[in-house]
Amino acid sequence: MYKKVLSEKILIKKIYNFFIFTLYLFSQPFTATAQFIDKFRLIRILKYYLASSDQLLIQKINEVAFIVDLKDRVNSKKIYINKEFPQFAEFLKAMEILKLNDKFVDSIVDVGSHYGNIIIPAMNHFEFSKGIAIEPISENFNILNANIVLNNLQSKVDTHKIFLSSENDKVKIKTYKNNSAAALASFNLDKKSLKSYESLNNLIELNTEDVISRKLEDIDGITLLKSPIYWIYAQGEEFNIINGSQQLFDQNLPLVIAYSPLLNNTHSTSEKEFAKILITKNYSKVYDLYDDEPIGNKINAEYFLKLKNYLTKTSSMRLLLFI
Image 1 (cartoon, rainbow, N blue to C red):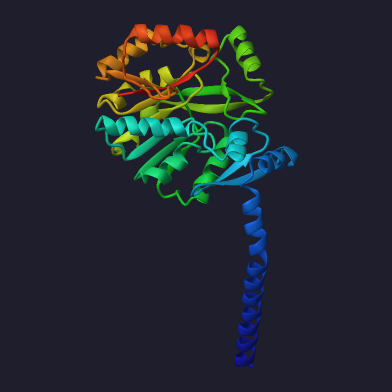
Image 2 (image 1 turned 135 degrees about the vertical axis):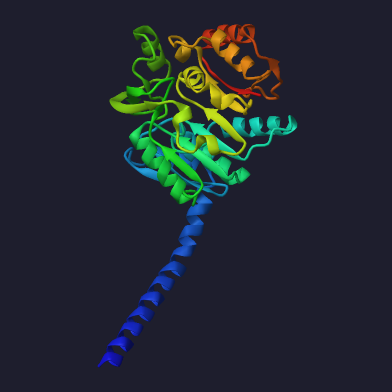
């Protein structure tokens, strides 16, 4: 009786395996066709805009599989339609400059990770030994973790759902329906600046989220990283984050920040104070990664004043590398 049952189980397993294999073979032409069609940008545009806005899609870029959210009409749109990761070209520039200056990098701290469009391709491309990703918004954080698992990086990348600033506290963060990367702390801007920010970016408010605020230096394992690069895209909190964790930068570690005068306008740490902090930590050069061929400029208050005046007139921002 036992042999008969065992034989039947083996037969069922064989039939099941045959069914799965047949299904796999049958699906291959369709998979190949779908991959071929996806090569055309116009098709991707149509697919993106015709799909339901509450849908998640996976895009393959080189060796990286990446989930995007169709509600997000900025980063997700760029990733899916252009098959490029926003700001990753600037990250590659930073790494090339560091190489030319004999700066070795073996890990990354990505502040404001969003869905992982910097840390995931960076880990894949440069094979860093470790990464730390920090993202305060719940929905972004969930997609970030899913993308990390999707690319088998969960053993190398630690994630933290917190807001970084110069002190430990709790903050309220405004989120936006059509741009999930545009969230910012509600205390960051005065009413006039906030209105200007939302208007310039065509933002549709979603809700307000309560998030724990911590100092960068208090993140688990951050002092154990080997030769890290700090990539800080934190919606105007960049100066405060560094000011609150100055000891992390005592060894002149490579640092990239997003700088926007509009978002930095009401912060406690000024451009002059920030330049002074960098100089005391032995940073000497700043590179504008938005330049086609970035050149090293001397770090001082005058540099920031000149850049601030230009960016204020154009309502724009820059990614700056400090070494």
